Image 1 (spheres, rainbow, N blue to C red):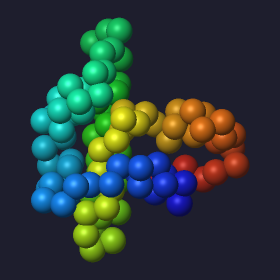
Image 2: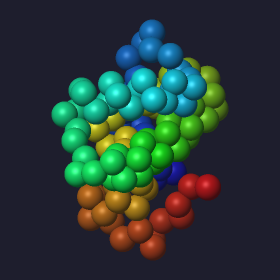
Image 3: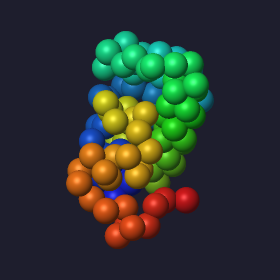
Image 4: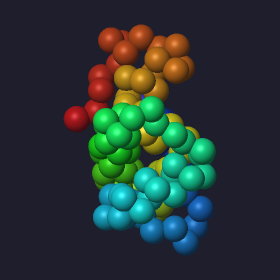
Length: 99
């Protein structure tokens, strides 16, 4: 549920493809440009890309369950559930991380 709230911050504008993971590389490049994201190393960029793609898989899954696009890309899309929870000041141990 908390992860859904995380992705809910990324309401998709109508007309945008609901299948984010299918073109993850392109979406990641657009994400980096839109949010002025720069990483300190290629290793960090690779790590963030992996997290981003996993989050897009989850957005696709939730959109499919929802029946219409409601979840998508936000400025937090390259953050893990634990990192996002920490940004909100939450103790991750209180929440069940999505599988």
